[in-house]
Image (cartoon, rainbow, N blue to C red):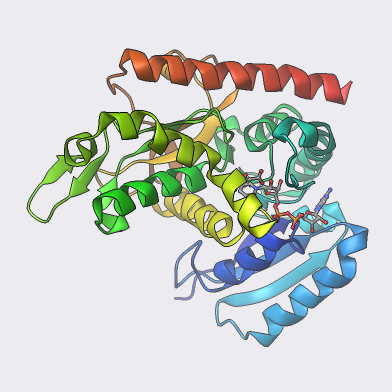
Length: 332
Ligand SMILES: NC(=O)c1ccc[n+]([C@@H]2O[C@H](COP(=O)([O-])OP(=O)(O)OC[C@H]3O[C@@H](n4cnc5c(N)ncnc54)[C@H](O)[C@@H]3O)[C@@H](O)[C@H]2O)c1
Ligand SMILES: O=C(O)C[C@H](O)C(=O)O
């Protein structure tokens, strides 16, 4: 029997990530090849014509899974009955701007959209915040939508996770799908800590530690970390635009694994509300290693944390605590 369609909201749908993301959703990359979808697209008035154009293209592409398109500048209409909300809309960082510069513009958007989601989305709506500052926007959304379960509000660090997999795969000349269990701890910013201490490579007959195969702790503790931390800025420098296709693809990975589950023995990184695991202060949205089953994520417990990692995990937590107070000061 055919499944009922799932309603997926994409905010900022006329923007560049939105343009890459909606066809991926319509092709089944987010929810699977047998899951029909109705895509809700929200943007603001100045982008209304462009949004209309995206809707026309979605229709023209004749996607078999696409059962309807809502394209609107009305946040209430956009949020009505949505099961999944991918929050991409916001003010984008331009070359030379610090993430903090975009903070005040974005947190007020997220405060307003929190109420719309709370009142009009499906009761169990899952939310993924992509727009920067992603962790803090997600936190603001959580705080101003108290009736949405906190487990349903997450932010995107899967792009950083995938970037880390990509760097290891390039370094070792192995296929990226043979590398697993890297971790992104903390903020989707240049303080994030990409950790390979528990990562492995499938060599065909064994799972070998990445650290052993790379055999270059200096590279792993320095260049590898900064390359992943700075990858977003490097792409802005090269494209004069921030990453879009990789962000859209990683957003699909995030939601797919959340809804359909992570493969056995594999974890992924997600920005989630801290419960105090690994000594990270509660009250912030922090990226942890998680496994997903039955549409719920759980933080992987019991990983050994060395002194080097501890410092980096605490530094990125500290930045998030500071961002939180900055966000509140912008809202006052
Ligand atoms: N978390 C991540 O890994 C990651 C990766 C890449 C980009 N980003 C962030 O994602 C966001 C979007 O990036 P982009 O390149 O698509 O930007 P973009 O500027 O091309 O698109 C943003 C869209 O949001 C719309 N918008 C602005 N205010 C809105 C509002 N109140 N409601 C709905 N829509 C609104 C704009 O009109 C625009 O169409 C940026 O904040 C960017 O920094 C995050
Ligand atoms: O938009 C940005 O600031 C960069 C983006 O978050 C990225 O990681 O590519």
